[in-house]
Image 1 (cartoon, one colour):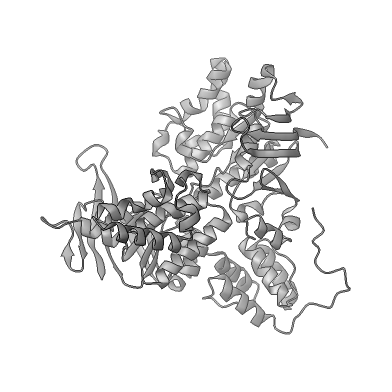
Image 2 (tube, helix red, strand yellow):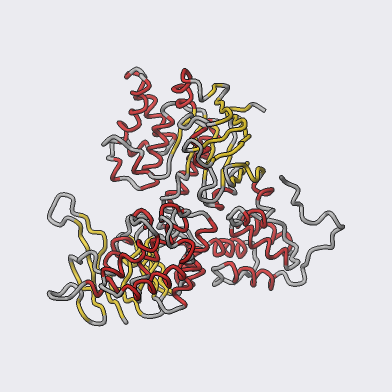
Length: 299
Length: 276
């Protein structure tokens, strides 16, 4: 399966005084097995690009093809794209509307005209996938769920369509640290099970930890595209764009300034831990008296 | 301690006989202090924030702002002036079509004489780093800039306290940095008491006091070093250590001679000491 954007340009309200080009001449291919992070400053065109992935917007220039077929050509059934490319908007829980979690998740599959058994099966697996309990939470109102679970319920509605590509626009925005971690693990698990992921994010630590590819947008154009290690080592350019760099990368820069040979390509926590332990091998803590250890004296 | 906000046995329920969003809260804030409030979604942070400037009145207990009881109607306006609030969504807080008008809105409501307004507005915009955008339309600004207009709007009322309820949650990294820097400066230079609610642990390390909320009460209260030294408890509160703190703790567990570090700068400095 291959989704291909070929020289895609999108101009909002063309010909009006409010004309604004959000993305320019973007060529990008999303294939099986990818986990792509889409990063860039506010207004760089990330969300516009995401909406081109499943044909929600029609390019004002260029083409979007799915397995070689132009999805905007006359007579093409765009429902096919919508099924195969799932799109999760920012704050998707604001789109929950049904009385129960099960009903909400089954909305999409029901529109596909599937049998009741097939729908139930899809709802069950989608709930399992996002870590919601079918028996105890399926009949609840989605609005009774915690913030993190509401979001996962909304994502389950998209997963129940069994997309081969899942695009998520800032899926962890506004979640607390635990809910964020759970959500990222859930996305990583979907990826392991074969769904290609495109994720718009501002969290560079997540991009460094989970993604296999990082695409950087600036002013509507793709300015970098490569493995996270390739992209994040261009820290200076990223910082100039107003983006963050992974914290581990910043640590590495500081350490090297001080003459400590921390590897330049370490970008995530695990790599940093390994590198530091290696560097400080033999420099272990002096033994302490009992009671001195810990220092957790606090209410 | 010169306290500016005090909550005494405060409980709050959204519905009569409903569950308590805040329960038996006892807390006070020192004038000029710089505090971050952490806690998982639903832990009572926002409810507490709204109790602190009289947007919510306690179901039980008492909240005082600079000695004024929020439940006493005669103080309502005085309290709102003294304790400004910034909310999460920048688009819901701006009302006018030009930045200066937006900042003037609160002043008009307070009945500030028009002759006094330009000076107060200019001062507020300057403090928020938005002077150069004074005549722009708010909807053309970035999220971080919109939040700074909201801050200017609050500042023009000359508050002593600013409460930010996840003011950076919807912003990009640059916007987050801009807004937090403005609040740091206001605290440092103007002595404004800042109460900053956040889910970002990397922001929290920049505050002098951290309060962790859980189930409507205070679960932890101390300096960042104190709070972040108890990883197990934080995890029970559905929170996580900042990346650098977690990294330094892992190294400690492997017996490396590294203390708890909260930032990359800390960790690099400690590593340097042991390197040579």
